[in-house]
Amino acid sequence: MEKVTDEIVHWLRESVREAGVSGLVTGVSGGLDSAVVAHLIQRAFPDDSLAVIMPLNSNLEDMEHADKVIETSGISQLKIDLTNTHQTMYGQIREKLQEQDAFQSKRDQMADANLRARLRMSTLYTIASHYGYLVTGTDNAAEWYTGYFTKYGDGGVDILPLVDFLKHEVKEMGEYLGVPKEILDKQPSADLWEGQTDEAEMGTTYAKIDAYLKGVEIPEKDKELIQQMHSRTAHKRNTAKQFHRQQ
Figure 1 (cartoon, one colour):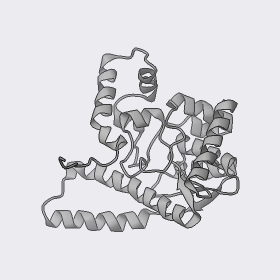
Figure 2 (cartoon, one colour):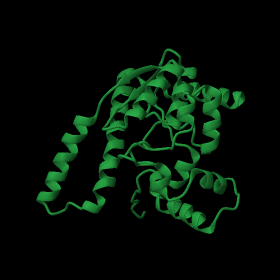
Figure 3 (cartoon, rainbow, N blue to C red):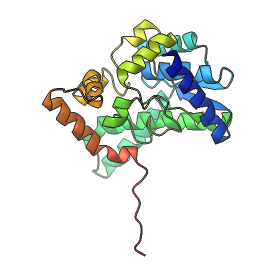
Figure 4 (cartoon, rainbow, N blue to C red):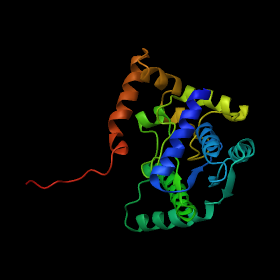
C-alpha cells in the first residue's frame, strides 16, 4: 500500500505540473472516498491542497466526520454552506415548472439530488479558479463502471486518482493513510437525501460490484443489474455526443 500511495502522490504532482497549476482541491463529505482523496492530495501538496466542506441540509454525523478528515489529514479547509442557495434555486425551478405543468413529482427527488451535486461541483470550480488548483474527484472503480455519479456533478472533475481502485481497495488505502475508523466502517452515502445510501439506491452491494469487476462469479440478478447500469450510463463516461456532417 505504501508503494501504491507513493505512485498516486507522484501522479498527482505530475498532473499539476502538466496542467501548469499550483495545487489541488477536493470536496470532503465525511465519506470514505473523499477522506482518502483529502489525505492523498495533502501528501502531494502539503502547502497547496484544499478540502472544501459543503453542507446542504447534510447529516450532522457526516459533517462531524468531515471535520475529522481535516484534523487527521492536516489539510487546509474551507466550509461553505449551500443550503440557502439550493433552496432558492430549486424553489424557483420547481415553481416555474409547476406554472408550465411540466413538474414531474416522480422525478423530483433525483432532479433535486443532481442539482445538489452540481452546485457542489460549481462551488469547487469557482474556488479552484481563484487558487489556481485542479479539481480532484473521488469516484472509485465501482462507481465509475456503474455510472453511480452525477454527470457534471461529482463526475465533472479534472483528475480521478481512485478510478482504478475497487471499493475494498480504497478502504485498505484509507486504513493505511489513517482515515478514522468510524469513516472506514460507515455505510457509503452520497448525502443526496435523508437516509440515502449508495447500496440501497443501486440495488446491489459494492462487494458484488468489486467481485464482478475482478471476474468473480456473482448471482445472475446482480450481474444483470451491474451490466444494465454500465450500459445505460455510458454517456456519463464520454464527452458530449457530437454530430459530424458528412464530407
